[in-house]
Amino acid sequence: MRRRDVDLLRGTVTVEVIRTKTMAGSMVDKVPKAEAGRRTLSIPSNVLPLVEDHLDRFLGPEPTALLLDGGFRPLRTAWDNARAKVGVGYHFHDLRHAGFTSTAELMRRAGHASPAAALRYQHATEDRDKVLADTLAEMAMKASVVPIEPTVTKAPSRRR
Image (cartoon, rainbow, N blue to C red):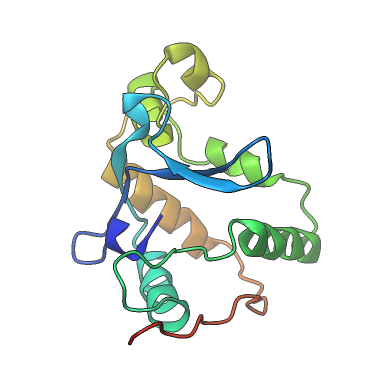
């Protein structure tokens, strides 16, 4: 995702293009496999200030600046450090189970085109996307927080 995909005013992030690794090992941008993969999601209210801080500290001003320059490796490293520090064995992909509820909501939020894919993450409740995001924020506020040092540095601006 890029800077332009984040709408801080509305508290949303839009997924229109994904970056994936080819068999040859290079990175390529493409549209999601299914139309359902293109979606706009609410950002949990407790995460929104962190997203804004990340944009300010680590991204250039260009609308095309990558949210995670360097791919998911820094995020995955931070995740691994955090889970080791608090002693949980969850895998990064397990985060997909955190906010998925009814099949329709699950398909929309996860970008799944088929109920079969969505049912892997099915959980019991029927709330809207914003309510899901706010519920995740509320849950996070109740959890104890163990600060970890950021592993990403701001890329230099490429203005001419």
